[in-house]
Image 1 (cartoon, rainbow, N blue to C red):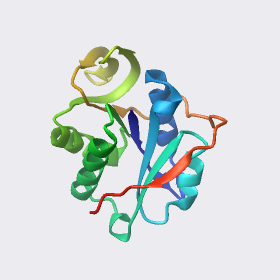
Image 2: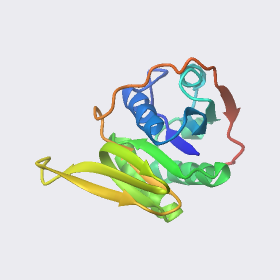
Image 3: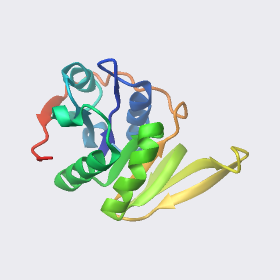
Image 4: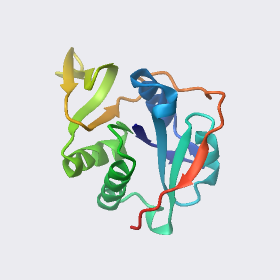
Length: 175
């Protein structure tokens, strides 16, 4: 399964979340993709998510209304284990850059950051990102059972609705 941590801005999914959906679609079939939403008052964003992916996992709690990387890392890691996700996508936004390494450490997973291209070869993920002040494109690989991947904003086109209505599921974990 491919799990995407969605970012919500003004009650809608952020553009960078839509870009993560496009990147995830490159790795597997659409029915393997789930969107995770953490926060408070997420119904509008969750409804939007059901037009993009088959499953939207929602943890709507007041204590998640404000981003806290420590609490969110615990929540995301627990959900990844619960749904047995093999790939976890984040936007390389400020929050995603703060959260993705924490989640990778908690899961003992590969961390691929600021990705601009992506392909899957069996269980190996091959990706590219810029290094040396964006002058050199470097190829990297993730080979563990779980790979945490942050997508550079603007590197992939935003996803459009898939034409299938997905389902919303409450995340059964307690925080």
